[in-house]
Length: 424
Image 1 (cartoon, rainbow, N blue to C red):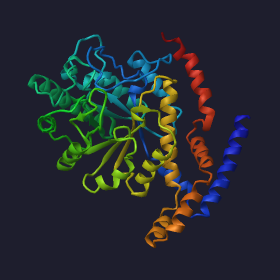
Image 2: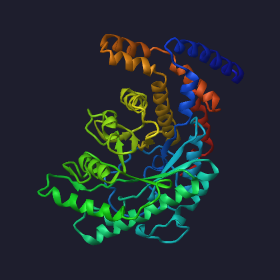
Image 3: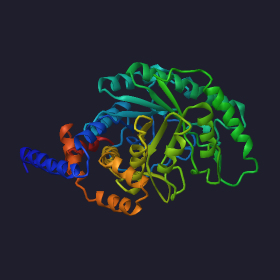
Image 4: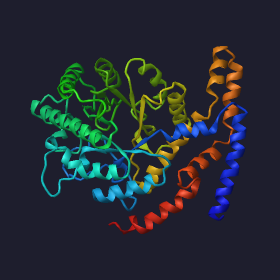
């Protein structure tokens, strides 16, 4: 089909879809305008399998990508190039989420607790040139000082102090990103600390972690530039029985200090969804960070699919009126498929889930529920599943001059042939 014929088909399909949704009182143009304002933060570590550019020795601390698909990024320039290739296939304006292991030292040796904004200046320049926001994460893994499996909760004060200084510096780097780009950087703390087997003393490591966090957060930073977040976990590799930074610990810390709580979709029990947590937590803290992932049987971080779990997250964000209070980022690392495709498919699925939620007749749904007409509620919710949201999505892609549906694959294959296949 020629591009002209394809565009004509998308426009005519959208016109019919718009009519169909109007029967339910839904304005599709309004939904698309709302979707265009939502930025997704792409996780840089999908592009190089969480390698970074330090080449340090030490424990991976529960971070374990699998697969060896050819073409992973070997340098920061290649990683930025691959990110650009993905971003060009994702409608809208978005962000990139960096870990501190993606610093650029220009041939110098810089300890991780001595990182400064200048080590990320090229990232900031690239983001500004491409109208992107940046988010940030201290990296408490893949380092000799993390080889014990403990960082901010270590019994060794030298280890604790090393990581405290690292996190303090990372907050300043986040502030720098916010100042340079005119949009707040979300700086998120996740640590791998925990025990493989059942511990005797659960309390002391958590007391040490609280003290470390208090020192890290001691300096106030303007939230116009940096927003702090803490990320809990149920278990990880090497910490199957006890994680110091549990959900309860970090929820308490976030509420007490009025900072963001990061909810990672892969960090809870496989039958537990983070969607249900939003309306509870947002009663007590101003904003939340989402790390949208897909756990399979355990915390395995698979590429996000347009499935029921993702739909539930998007619905809760939209139905709760939380769009202005929720920061949406992706977090997975699949090295078994084309890495640019992994970013693109995951981000577009997140957008499609949000679009489906924005296309709901929310006022009518709320009124039905308020009237306790649960028969009508289930009937309406089931009926909505058959509406032509794909036609609205294709029109959104057309508006933003990116390929719709499966058309992204030809672009990704062309990029693979031209660039990725040449890498060793």
